[in-house]
Amino acid sequence: MDNLIEAIKQLKKEKNAIILGHYYQKGEIQDIADYVGDSLALAQWAAKTEADIIVMCGVHFMGETAKVLCPDKKVLVPDMAAGCSLADSCPADKFAQFVKEHPGHTVISYVNTTAAVKAVTDVVVTSTNARQIVESFPEDEKIIFGPDRNLGNYINSVTGRNMLLWDGACHVHEQFSVEKIVELKQQHPGAVVLAHPECKSTVLKLADVVGSTAALLKYAVAHPEKEYIVATESGILHEMQKKCPQTKFIPAPPNDSTCACNECNFMRLNTLEKLYNCLKDESPEIKVDAEIAEKAVKPIKRMLEISAKLGL
Image 1 (cartoon, rainbow, N blue to C red):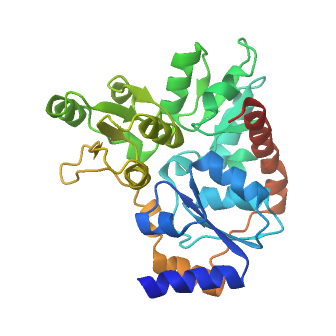
Image 2: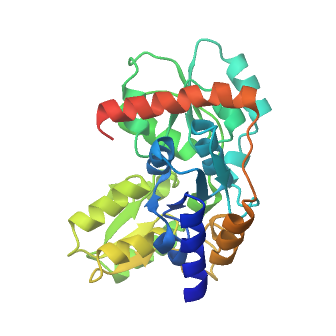
């Protein structure tokens, strides 16, 4: 393991590469990454890096976002099969047809989408900035929001908007068990429930704090004396525990009775060995059709500009 880590560091130096890791990656990948963050932070770092090669340790759409923002850089992913159930729930051709059937709407797409979906979008959002970006539009603005119905419903509920929602969802956040969270709350009556807005509304009703991965981490760091039940992909517990070593973090379990925590199978496809091979061979490489990339970059840049103005 130590030799592998040293070899990755050496290759990174030789090739002027940067490793970006999502909070949902395995702990050893988070530890070797130059930057670890949520989707917004990874897009922000990709947009400003001076590296020649970006290795995106996350899922496919994150690599696409980096490539669209940095067309002249080589963008690699350790495993091309690391997809996203939420992105898969929104095929570009069907979403484009949905948009066409509802003219006069501003199209807001969650970052968890393919570049082809972003190409028919006016502005991209992440869970960190979705509420603020929606609220930056006039109250009577007609909006299509896709693809996550749970996040869309949550944004509608906190903003009073009535956005038209695409019917998609993340398999991880859909699977949290309300009954098991209630049981955990009974076993740990003082615990604070942290939940990601991609969770179902029944789970969000049990939450004390609803927020993006970065927001949930920030809250835990600001209140290390508390005990937490965490309803999001369990990879975030690695960073939470690093930042708050004395704090107890309990992963919220899914409906599947064999699991004590909820993991994204796609995120877990990336390993240190695949990361090493990816850097050594400079493959698999993310490619995005030039015409799609030209259209997709506009809503991503618009998100980054609005986020910068809002101080996010």
